Amino acid sequence: MKKNEITHKGKITEITPDFTTVEIIASSACSSCHAKGLCGMSEEQEKIIMLPTDPYATHQVGDEVEICTKMTMGLKAVWISYVIPLAVLMILILSLSGIFENEALRGLAAIAGVGVYYFIIWIFRDRLKNEFTFYIK
Image 1: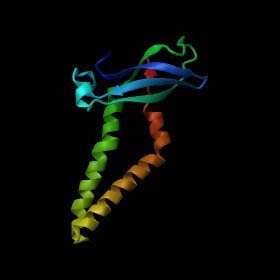
Image 2: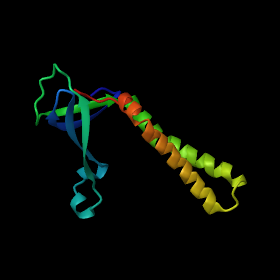
Image 3: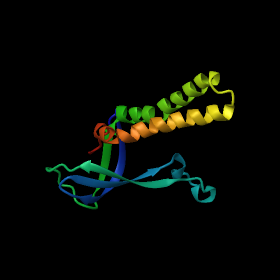
């Protein structure tokens, strides 16, 4: 594994001429804990990733593969999904204090602003899908 890559192990579930579907198990840090059965806090989630099919690849359905992406893509995803909405929320809460005296209205307006941000992200989801690319190693 390179230093500037994010990798996950997965299993190929489907191969079409356009897309290769890979299922990965995303697990939390406590999923490897020896007491996870008693605790009940461990989480494992199956995620499906669709990659463009490489016409020269020799992979078959059921093969264990390693899915990779650049580290910068992970950092960009964190900024888009967590940091920027937090900044929008804080800016709106602070700037709306002069407009609304009622704190509940201020909070609702700030949450609505974050909702508008996520709606804009949803509108541009196809463009973002093209930017966030994975590949099979």
